[in-house]
Length: 147
Length: 472
Image (cartoon, rainbow over all chains, first blue to last red; front, side):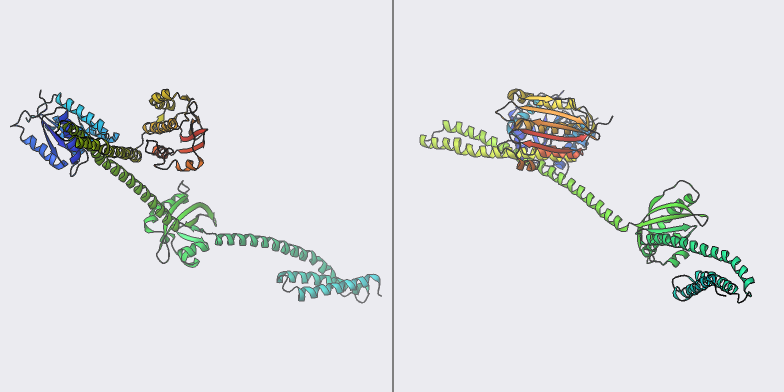
């Protein structure tokens, strides 16, 4: 049983990334937040994580994943992670502007752990990420273990 | 001795001679040769008979008496011949007229008509010759399969074989033909088995549908292009309205962040050691000018967001596959109305729902449809009187009709045409995006339904919706 050790934020929009970070911090998240501005670099980082697991056996990460991103979409990343024997344990929250029911269904079908729509109205945006932050703080996560 | 009888006889003989003359000289071109010969013979016999009678009665000579009997014996036979020839002539003229009629028809008709026996064409009308570019004699010498496009030959041979054997086979079909110049024409055939000169044969009519084919092909392509471009448009609409959300979130977010920063600045300013006059000016700028600017930005951005939400809904309606099922409309409408319970209570609206027939459709979309109508009706009720909304329906032979009525402010005739267009709002202060009825229309289109509107100012609005009937 591990508390969250790191948040990976895959978000191509500079502004959104900043707003998300700000509001997570407001909720009391003190962990490292690493941000990637395209799908490819996020995926590369995660795959690299898998290689180095032996050294850092206490790794428990949360991935905040946008869907529409350059090079590789969030959906593709989600598919790759959830099909991987090791990486499937990464707690993955889809964070996107899309509230398309078909998209939501698809993501849960691929095994995302939560799906959050970024609210356009900022009061709601603040609330959403504040609650998400609180939620993540109290989340128990499994270690990523390579056997 | 000349008596009355012999005078009559003489006159009658002269009349016969006159008739003879007429037949010989005057009716030369009127009556055919064989008739004239028969008539001449009859007249000659009568003439000789008269002559012999005259001679007999005048007691000049009895030399012709023995002939007279023979002549009279032959006469009935000649008469019979004459009548037979006359009747036959009438009959033949009739047949000729009828044949002429059919010949003209067969040759004037725009379809090719032919008779095929074995592998030969034994009859073809002018149209066949014109279309294929052969003359009749050439056609009658050819094997029929030479006229058929090689790719269609096998098919036609099989059909023909079956038909000749009396088996059940296609009587109408399409096949390609080759003209003398080698061009390909598309033919539409209608054929039957007939007896021709005592043997089974095939009679067919064939229509040149090459142009029709071309037009159809163009039409199909145009329709496909249209569907594609509509799909592209929807995809484009979806992508733009979706992508525009990202900057909108930023504008909203950083606007509020600015707000927060200003609050912090104000706190800092309170504690700061600055001249009071300057402090007040700064506070004034922050509280009035900057605040006003930020409010305008926020409100405009909210408008953009409502529009984008509406556009997204519309594009989604076009992109998502329909899940068509039989729907319990009583239950569906009840659940839609329940969603408006708060507003209904608050405004004291009477909602009357009568027993509704079930229809076939996509539950989510129809819920959206009736929800939009409900929202419109509630929005446009007359505040001076008790609001009433009546929902009813009836089942027709082919579909179901639903009536959605309110006693609201109504729609002016000039607005009635405009109201289904996107972004049209009856009331400019309405916070909505002006897409409600556009969405309704799109849903109706998805269901191959129909929407009509009847409205009178200050009386209310009635919306009539046709949807497919549920299958039992």
